[in-house]
Image (cartoon, rainbow, N blue to C red; front, side):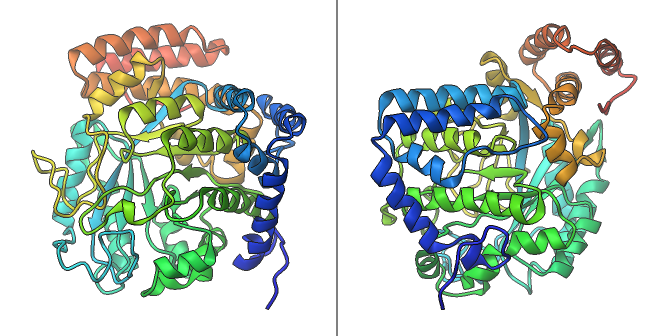
Length: 483
């Protein structure tokens, strides 16, 4: 059966259309040395330097694919410079922090790149009880975290939706000292509209699901068994999530499984599809790469990409999908993360452990890790490093709790209004961290940054409210200020 490319369709083979991607890659290869065209595309992309409610992205997956294929040093330099400027226009120098929380590694899928696959008999299987969830959350709160991304393998017996909902209820209920988890994002397998509605009712933050690969034949080879082997069911998950009322969704591919040019085109097309079909593009895009893990050798996949190419891909995502939050995890090294922050990343994990029950252990456990953690610094070390590099660490969750989600967040972000609210929210949540959790050195550094940044808030009333809130936080007479 032949399929026609249609970004508004809800059929995976039509909105992620293989022939459209192949035609796009052929076009990009034929025009990669046309420097006039490349610079014309970048000229057009500069339209994103001025956020406007009238537009989201102004260049297409085909435009971006030409830029990706181009090897000219001048074009590549301009891509990174523009990506940095666009990121500043939308998100400024704020970086949102989060941590993953692994609930269970029971899984019935046969994914060849994941140590949780059902045939792996070397990995101990574990599922947290609610008491263990509480202990993990308290450990995360004691670091200073306010935002979690919960993770679980696909196993209807061990990890049913009722278990996920119970864990969310437990997480939101825990108040330890001044700690509180204010946003729970959920990364679980594709499910039904009804179960997405249940997640919405449980106050999910963002629903996150990595496509892994958009190449259908490659996808089916990499997922030989289990419910995840159904490419269309998996690829159409975001449509069902939207139908179920979850209007903040997060995309991602696992770079290294298939050819990067194909994956990049598919990823941008998925973002375009969400815009076309729902008027709401992806709230976030993640950019993981295949990493070593128990029973997994990343060299078995011959599509790995260099750090330089990886950074170019991040820059092009920022240029092409300017409004989205781009996430980079502790899969990547300190140096890679530093450069990625300049080219478009706006969210990072810190102090992460990818094992089930790993946060309560003094020593980092490895036996149930999903992947090796390259950046093993503590959260405080990451925060100090961010500030040394002129970034403002942010624990803000105000938009979610104030109802600025989905199309409301997108119109807010695309029009540039995000800057009027996110800056004071970042500063007040940073002040909370500095008072409650920071080392003396980090606190001193952070307070100097807060004083400097308060003077940059253009609205005098908001600036005054922010200063009052921070003074109250420092005095121990208030917290959780929202703008």
